Length: 163
Image (cartoon, rainbow, N blue to C red; front, side, top):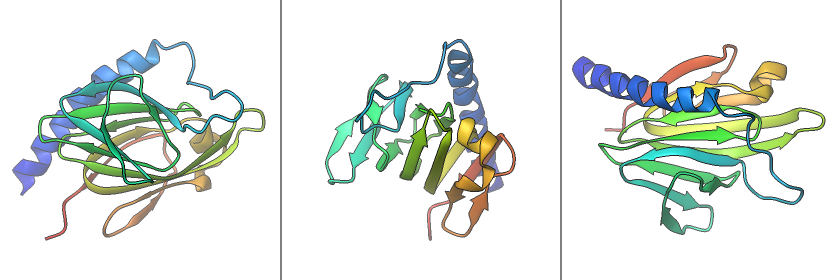
């Protein structure tokens, strides 16, 4: 069990290093035009990654695809993805993961917003953006056994699939 967790975290760290390096060179987080219905953009995709919308439709994800405020991102065993939300939050989703973006809203003028994620299985690294920096209580991550209130700006979460 410990070896499996260590291997998953190593894979996540390797995937996140490249994704965060690419993000660091980006000029600014994506900003939605008025009336747009996306929370962010998939920055990188490695392997087979699926996006499942609230309507139940699944599609194969590609770098540059928009992600809705309510979407599921699912990665295969040898896959990973990074997502940059409109407030600048960066998420790196590791192999064999399932992450639900349950709620995202952000007003770039007032910097008011909220973020709720549910990591159903797998691993995730998160570097918080403006919401986490200005309103830490408005950022939450749920797992099968706990809800995490974010107080830091860079962390990793591992969630095993239910037995």
